[in-house]
Length: 236
Image 1 (cartoon, rainbow, N blue to C red):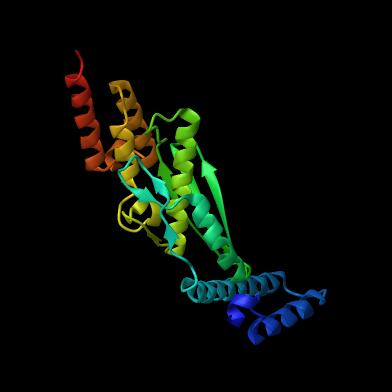
Image 2 (cartoon, rainbow, N blue to C red):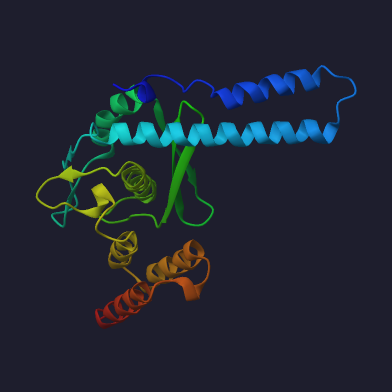
């Protein structure tokens, strides 16, 4: 294990010298306030850069130790995927060893938003987000549909931050976040609709998630139209 992974980087000589200058200035009752603020801002920039460098070095050291996770999840025979509990169990010891912590935030204002935050002990952090519809496939109830999307969001964002891989019969993007666009989740949700009202609801959720109707990908708009037509044709 490298020093990068084992401990927080010690202060550089430049940072130490700057801290000493700030300490001397703060002890001077006649110190210029603007000069003091400038020294503090310079120190904060140096520390932020030092933390970012430590983050990048530790992430590089960790990559070869991150495991490939088996795909025990099965989406009704359509694809297999790595379960979030398997991913979490596999990566936690490696993250801790290299000074990282992975946390999540959720936001339900417009769709189901999941943000993953990868923090390093040196102070730097990186994050990525995804916004999804509820996943009613497999006759899930409302609570299960939200929980399924949150779980998918964790798998996707963790995979994106850490470049995780999985293995199984179908190396699907639901597990790795590498091959398919997140809009596949929207396509599955549209296909699961059992009425035109549900399709219209999905369409509104997409508008909210993408910002406005013009930003909704053409493939998703077309999928909504096809589903409406299929539901109409199936009516007695």
